[in-house]
Image 1 (tube, rainbow, N blue to C red):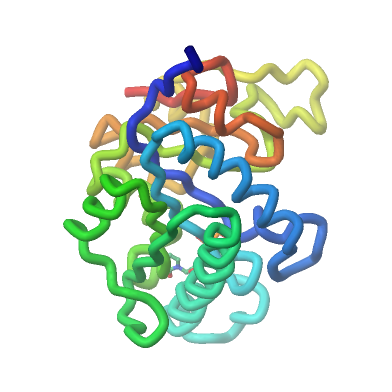
Image 2 (image 1 turned 180 degrees about the vertical axis):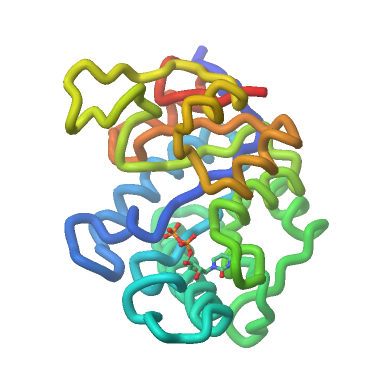
Length: 239
Ligand code: UDP
């Protein structure tokens, strides 16, 4: 009998940078196809998957092109960037046989449907992949916070934070060869050690809601599958 997933419903946070591959900005087609392949594996195991997609590969509100801009305006541009990524992700998912639904926190009716919680829950029950776009819909927040928020709203068992590194380390593994990966770490310990796992708002929300975070690498083949099978992969941050 094939291994059974440990999770029924997960919230996967993909940063915009994850879509860039080795490019300097934008969306790298081969990268997105490979990433969707990883997602398809767990969806086909019967896991309900919701995705929050970032926008940093196209626009980041607080840096770069936004210098000198009104912060809220720049942040709205950042949120619109996440909608573009969501469309690209949705397209790639459809081509790989998944059934995605993009739901935006900002009304852009002609392009994507608005976020409506009961509808999102219905889609998940139907085995569709829900892609949450436009973050929280509010400036001064991040898509990490959107991941914590939507994760709590849909009753996800875990927020999966996909990064370039395969977990949380005691020091920067690229600089310090003695750095060790934590298999598990509590919210309190992660805080006391000042480990930057998610931004403070996102972290506090997960901690308050006792919503575990799993940090893992989306670039490591099969890692997402191993995470949902409950195997030793990445770092679990628990309450
Ligand atoms: N953003 C925002 N509110 C949100 C989510 C995102 O204002 O709820 C804006 C913000 O400007 C941010 C940008 O959208 O810099 C892109 O999101 P984020 O930086 O979280 O993307 P990632 O780093 O995951 O690619």
